View 1: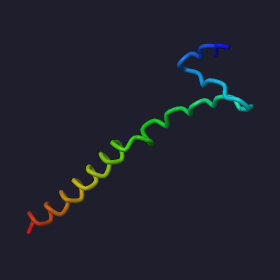
View 2 (view 1 turned 90 degrees about the vertical axis):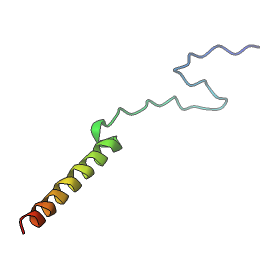
View 3 (view 1 turned 180 degrees about the vertical axis):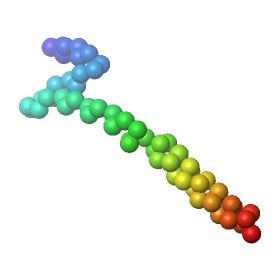
Length: 59
């Protein structure tokens, strides 16, 4: 007996399984991307460093 072909986007059925394939959740946008947070930290660090450089330059 041959098994029916399953399209690549679907999960093949398993013996004894009563659950259906679950859908992947949607992308969370910029809040899930580490480059956003890294950029925010770097910008904040540059602003703080600029403040201290301005204070030192004003002496």
